[in-house]
Image (spheres, rainbow, N blue to C red):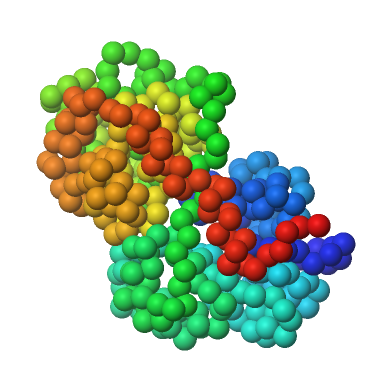
Amino acid sequence: MNKKQFKRNADVAVFIPNMCLGGAERITLNLINELSIRGYLVQLIMLEKKGELLSRLNPSVELIDLKAAKIRNSIYPLLIYFLQNKPTAFLSSMWPLTIVAIISFCLFGKKTDTKLFLIEHTTWSRDEITQSYIGRSLVKYSMRVLYGLSERVIAVSKGVAEDLISFSGIKPSLITVIYNPVVPLRADSVSVPAPDYNEWAIGSHKKILSIGTLKPIKDYPTLFRAFALLSKKTEVKLLLLGEGPLREELKELAIELGIYNTVIMPGTVTNTTTYYRYADLFVLSSIGEGLPTVLIEALSEGIPIVSTDCKSGPREILSDGLYGKLVPISNPECLSDAMYESLQSTNDRELLIKRAKDFSISNSVDKYIKIFGLSHPN
């Protein structure tokens, strides 16, 4: 770790693995950029200084590279950090990084005025890690024993908070719900580049969009089966943005279902705004979420939404179906029917955009500042 001495202690230090493309990383980007814009000194502490989102950070954010290829290798450099720095608030997310933060903080940080905050994005009862007995026990009991040593645990939705309480046994009084900072001030006049994938963006067909990591919890096989059924009723093409371990499996399924030529999977895309603006429908097929950023982003562009009613987030974001259709998880027939109905219906775009403002960056960061106990920056 670089032992650079900073001019003054940070107002907020945020601990994260890296700034590669991902939901939690994009939320972190929005949070620390807004804090920086408001004049607070922010340090971003990473296991490894890498990721596509680094280029989008506010220049005033101070970057600290722990140079730790593995999480366990970050404990010592993080101890050194706490010896040298005393931020007002230290925020850590992503178990088991939260556990490393607690251990290091209790050894040195607890002797200062720094307050430790943890943030949970995940419904752990549905996560892949906790589906085995060993994984479930490890996550559950580490949270139960150690999370109480923090100042507060921030849950990104009411559903995440409820799941965390029932899953880990954490006291409800320790948890505060703050929605993710997702939506900036929208400007329709701001131009966005044309999409790169003309086979999806251009034509008379309906354009369906889905975004997420290609992993089991996103349940893209159900989306593909629903899309195959939908393709028999109307002309559609699906653009699936994201990368992950199930790419080959999904490719084989697309061939098997006869939809290989109408499903485009280009991998990860840094700027997704242009694709939202071209889409006729956004679909989320997950069997588990925390507070899915992609649904909020779709709302902010006024796009009709069909989502599975998974734990948690979609029902909360869509207000029990007022702002989009909710369907049972792992049910291709119901998902396909809802997609077809949405494509045939008229859409109140302004109503959706208005709902998205409830998840604005400004509103969320106001609440973070309050819970951190930050005074106005000098």
